[in-house]
Image 1 (tube, rainbow, N blue to C red):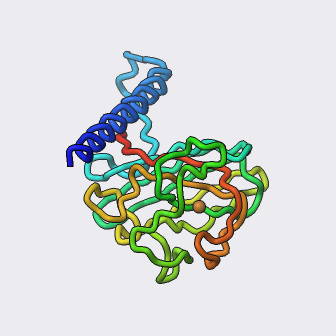
Image 2: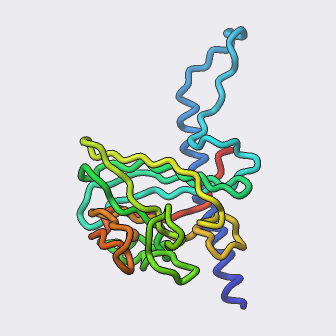
Length: 211
Ligand SMILES: [Cu+2]
């Protein structure tokens, strides 16, 4: 029990410092705007918020995706939960053109060069791997993301919180786990992970605050 509390405190401490880093970056960004005190007739510039939903009621998390398996992949995945809907917005670059398996894996550890440190698919309900649009799939099964000719992939999707959640007490809470991008296509049926090849990108999902 004590160990759990210690781990939880550590986790919150880490999350908090991650948030502070983000705030620092935001501050740097906004400070670039030139100050024009006499321009009273123009509306004051609003600080740039990288995620679309209003901050107040949403729980937000993000993963900064870093390269794995010798790739040049980088990107960001934002998650925003409001009520029973979780919005996912991913922008990943440095990919080979075409479709790439895209999942939440169970461990928030991208430290190994091949990203296998992130473990298998996040599968709290112990079900088969599958199509996110079908009835049976892992909580971490986000299907594929498609990269264009320049190697950039974007994905915007709203999922029910019964699929995946950011709520701390939910069994399918993805915070503290990892987003993994694969070199190949997820066929959405091969077990246990869609035969999607090497892990070319990995990012730990951390709590995020826009304010
Ligand atoms: Cu995967």
